[in-house]
Image (cartoon, rainbow over all chains, first blue to last red; front, side, top):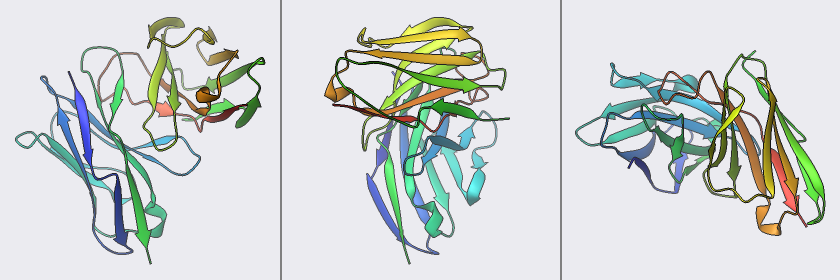
Length: 114
Length: 116
């Protein structure tokens, strides 16, 4: 069965520092992987998604993620954090070929300090 | 228009009340979803509608009753809820119900429900 593990429920960085949010997946078939962001009292917004092909995926707001099959990872990075990046981030996987059912990780809350 | 709208934004109800949540999209999507999100937790899937038919019910209690009157509209009827049902209820839609990364789910802003 597919699952997603996000390492670190809270991550704190200084403004301008590198952001690294970790996501590892478990899947017996090639996975479809997503990163979503949720700002306080809002719905979820798609940051980026992995499809077959390029393993380095660029998303919105300067975020990118690299799919590493050998490490079963899909970590999210941003070179320079901005105060507006403070939010909850969810990594998710879809069971390919079945219904469009997102399986979410537990989430990582990103805090950005001046 | 890539927006999913939800009304109301906030809802407070007693355990004997009947209320409804509404979700609307005008992207021509044929799959729509209800999620429940408790504080500091990820969203949990409740229902999936595919081409206006209920496809998935994730063992949700019958006090939650979904309805899809047409391809653009999704309702969630609430009756005899419990305080533990208080949560953020999110609606989402996607072009089709097939699981692949080309079939992005678009989320609405949610309805914050409080059951007294």
